[in-house]
Image 1: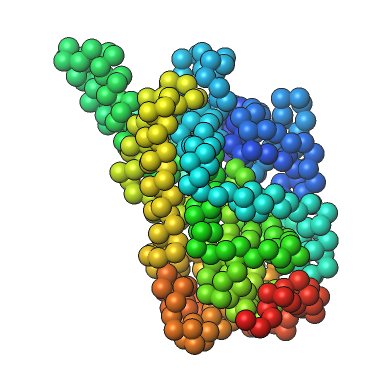
Image 2: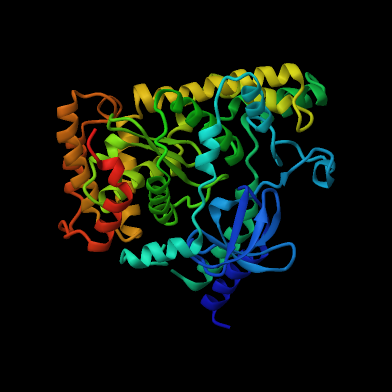
Amino acid sequence: MNIRVLAVLIVISVGVAFAAPMSVQVRNGRVRATPSQLGAVVATVDYGAKVEAGTPEKGWYPVTTADGKTGWLHESVLSKKPIVLRAGTTDAATGASSDEVALAGKGFNEQVEAKLRREGKLDYSWVDRMSAITIGADQLAEFRAQGHLPGGAQ
Amino acid sequence: MNDRRLLAEVLVLSLAAPVLLCGCATVSEAGTGIAQAAGVLTSSQAASINRSVQAVEKTWQDLTPEQEFYIGRAVVAQVLQTYPPLDRPQANEYLNVLGQSLAAFSARPETFGGYHFLLLDSHEINAFAAPGGLILVTRGMVRCCQNEDELAAVLAHEICHVEKKHGLSSIKQGRLSQAFTIIASESAKQAGGEQLAALTREFEGSVSDVVTTLTTSGYSRGQERDADAAGIRLLQRAGYPAAAMVTMLERMDERLADSGGFGFAQTHPSAKSRADALRKTIRDTEPSPDAVRQQRFSAALQSVLASR
């Protein structure tokens, strides 16, 4: 075999060998059919869920979800650190230190916000209202098409 | 390069990769390791020192997207105490469709809670990007924009502040060291009463650092130019003309001169100097505005653009 080809194969096999579990670090991860934020959503993954991630291409990981669905997730969705939702679960029991696992909900969290709300220090009503504004994929596609904005290119 | 040498180098790199990726023990770990070997420290003492040193070594870059989300929410709640929201559902929906359309092309298209946009009922010319993707734009700023492309330029600039986590970078390190030490000592998800009180204090301080930067002191000039340059690239990827950023800044400069230099003028480098710097970097000329985009911009923002 040509040595250059062999070198390329080694690089590829090392890449494949590193296909590893990664954790979803956003509240609602949307798995896309294509490596594009405008791609159709084929599955959703919750915060802390694990996916098998392959070698990324331009910021997009090919992934397989726990229930076997495949698609693409942007790197901003994923963390290399396992995310454990509660102490006492299997991952926490392996004895990994908090530096190796991100314990979801630790630190500046819902509990801290709840305390500020209880004490009447901050009014979150408009924060909740603006966060509730959601724009569907169809609405976005229509907006871009009507406005003569090219779609898809990242 | 000689083929055999190439193969050897690839093999060495392949074998070294896992070590390079994973083998980064901190200086403190090395230090306590030596002390343990010399019998100066017990293993539990060493572990305890390593935990607290690691907590102090952590910076704003170590905040998780979830923590960033909660900081951003509190930042917006606090900014809204000074700048009231503008309750115009149609205008806010348009702002969100436009913003989402841009955020999809950002280098950071997903945050913990996603990007959301809101108009503020203020004549001051200003816009604020809270950590995590909550973005606020005053009606005074909307009035500086003559078309959708220019409003897209404003939003692209703000999205880039979120992408680059400029808000988080303004949190004082002392607060974060305290917070990370408390987090490291928390044994479970739920913090106890005293820990929660201490954590909430550091949280409030962190939020206040970001709000002060957004509303009073401003980001550094370097960060603003970063957001301008990245904003132009984002605009282009999303299909808008780069020139819109320049024309928007030039108009803003004129309006700021009329307004006596409040708001945006206090927290940003001069709009004219930013426009001049950008004009040198872009090649495309100012295109005539797209008729559909012009029409929907005017229709959705009619009441916002109307007289004071």
